[in-house]
Image 1 (cartoon, rainbow, N blue to C red):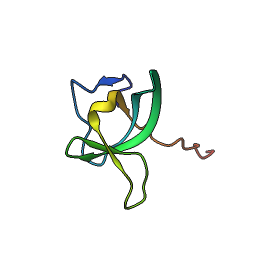
Image 2 (image 1 turned 90 degrees about the horizontal axis):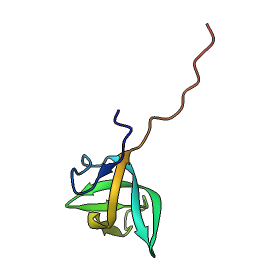
Image 3 (image 1 turned 60 degrees about the vertical axis):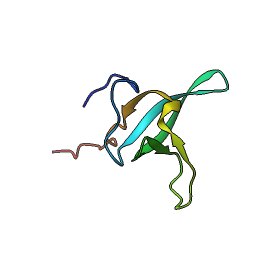
Image 4 (image 1 turned 180 degrees about the vertical axis):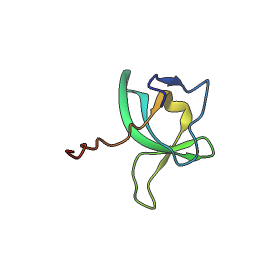
Length: 74
């Protein structure tokens, strides 16, 4: 898995991919959890009628890490 931030101008996420995105919120860079829903749009809420946002607000993004899983003792 790529662990580097990907500039949004270089690459789009895969359809329905969960991502962490850096957006500019009132002049301050902020990291938000969201997913790419296609058509250059992201969604930050899972409700069916949730607002979508134009991907242009994303400065850079990174795929969600896989959840932590404890190893079972041998």
